[in-house]
Image (cartoon, rainbow, N blue to C red; front, side, top):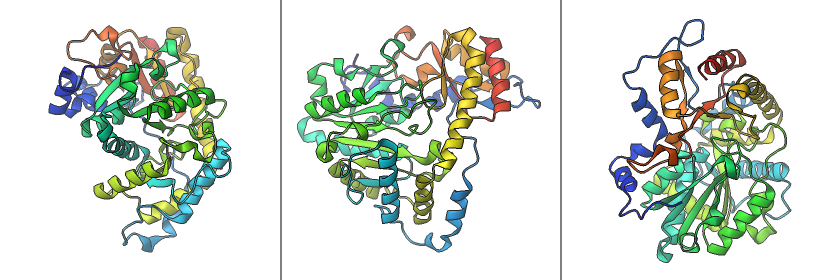
Length: 413
């Protein structure tokens, strides 16, 4: 399923006039504008935000300790390529986490610090569109529903987003393989998220290999958004780089990682990209133009966090507790089962937009309508929107708060 060309698509024309239509949280704000929240299940009746994946766990003590150990390094501009220690920490973590073959990555050339994976994903689109322009590569493949930065970066680059449904019948993973060759041959970059946002679906190693083969055969960039890679319920999810065949196999491949979820450090704004050295250089160049870099003390703290696994084990246990609670309370009402990864509940409620308004006005619960994660043509049938029947619920609050919110959601369902 593909939209018309950018010149004729009403959705694209509207997006260029008003970029907010691809921004789900701006859409949610408009939906609830003027609506008073009902009394939430908290003792004081204050609203509970379940709409955004904002970790509520305290950051590891290691973070503050390491920042405090480098008080004199805030005065200098940070090195855009990061420090050798930071790159080595990321390199070593990748090898531990994914059991990479020796020589798969060169820490000096193929790893770049990012002020969060979101920023890197954005600049990767600019890089890919810039690189592919001479070949007429103007398309960006995006899962629908999906993270809004994918569509936003396509819009900023003047590219044409191609939204590919990710539904229950294909395990909530986009079927890019079924797209016509003429679309794939004009694609500059494709995005995959595993564990996926919002459904928590996980790609197998075989699926990654199939996507790699598809991307390299048609000459487009494969960008793996793996910011939830360490938040899983049972088995560690496979990753893009572990599916690489040999040291030369990273051509056209980029893997993005972040400390936001792994270390409950969303405010730190720290992540990295690893993969194709030429693409990493391109992202580096655009980040220098945009002034997006990671301060040196944060590089030190980030390196320490990538080397520590104890706090990540505790984080996984925390989210598993919340998911078990959610499954117990919601399965009978929705058939919802615990996902393989991430920390969202993707709940089928009939009309997600109407339910989100009710949840706010009746129960003081702020949830995200699934259709807001799936851009659509004006006047289109909502039934064609893969996210229309769903809401996304972020399971991030402490168990006592989460339990009260889930009980109220179950009552409404």
